[in-house]
Length: 309
Image (cartoon, rainbow, N blue to C red; front, side, top):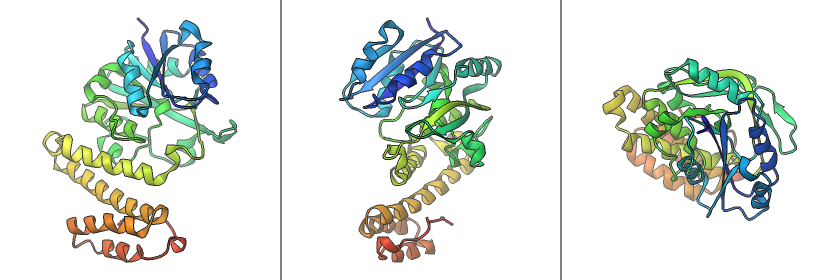
């Protein structure tokens, strides 16, 4: 039984999938299996995967989204640890070795993530150390409050204990983009700490037109995440009123930000529908009335992004 299960979901990514799989197979730590779940690709992915023979377990399913693809892979995984890798991203050769060593030395950690480099579609480096370059605060240790405010964990850098995954639960198929963020939160809600290595052990590929490139869709997922946390996770009962209040504040701020993005990317009509709902919930938040008035301004006149109070 392999100690690490490398999970690679893919959809119409034949342009990049070969290099991604090769970077997994090139790891210096050798006790692993590679599971590729093809989420209904109509390109050449199946043909490429057939070249790997028994070194890669290839599973095809109808298109159901990234959450379902990861969950399918995990239903077929046997490793003590889960290593996540998306079909257009890359690893450096010693990634598994470094992170397994860390997890073996830190039994309280449910997962460990790392610094990340960013490359474009042609492979040119945009950031050598993205977190450092952008001065992002990275969650580590017992970090529930910090993690509830920032989603600064890149999936391709994560190795998670299977026991932590089983306690936290599957990836939520209601979230098309940020299902990983909710899962990391659920791991910490289960009492696990988070580890971090400050070296860039993965390369994230930035692609124009990807789901992650849409700020509106991403913020919409954040809204869903905070709603799920408040309605389904018994935050106040299990973690205290202050944690529940923190999530309520985040929900309000993300809904307000989403209304702004809907005005910019869609229409004032769509934004006003959301703002009416917010005003009903918080009738004394006067900034909402200002936002409502701005929703009548033509999109071409919209200026800087909203900064919620």
